[in-house]
Image (tube, rainbow, N blue to C red; front, top):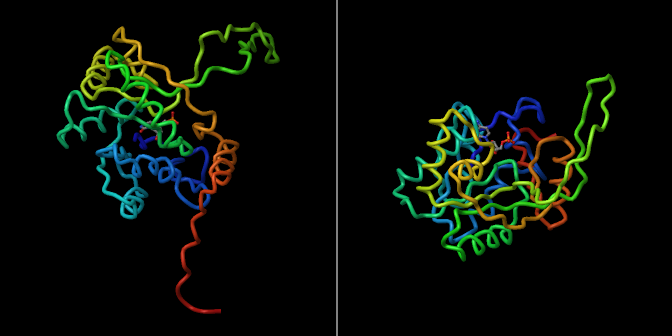
Length: 243
Ligand code: C5P
């Protein structure tokens, strides 16, 4: 789980992956379905160098989690996490799921659907959760003052890439190494595989699996988690002097 982004726009000086949602850090929500999944044999969290929030969260997770140090780009952070899996003796053919720390509403059902679809197709170059585009797409043009719609793009065959994305460890490492050698930084793992001429499978995910980027996303994510009956964290007990 790459969780080494700075993402400080949303909160007062706190990286967005630690922003509280119903009183729990976003990263804790994002990790939960993987930690509860017996088929996930190991979990690596990639934290930024100097991250002061990670160790406290790590200490209260329900099972041990490995850690790795993030890099300048998301791809560097993912590569660092994969190296940690190697060090933990994961092999070329082991499956790896990469999930954004900023997607706290992913469900076990989505993870199962991805695993079933990709696992059922042994020749597949892995796969990713994705959503077909529902909106009409406009090209914005501000060349003559006010921003105007300068055209409509076809949305046919267009999908939004979500996470998790699932690949064989060896294939993903080779693809990320090749991208780095070529001086290119993929914005998701599937792109690195596509640059190798491979075509990962698209597996339908849920619209609720949003990436938290804006304050409106925080509101939506909390509403989604609350609607599932997710329990808000109890406020920490206040110790000390009684009133
Ligand atoms: O910035 P963005 O929301 O696209 O980041 C997606 C995920 O990648 C987040 O979980 C973020 O913490 C992670 N990331 C990372 N290392 C970076 C940049 C982003 O682990 N250098």
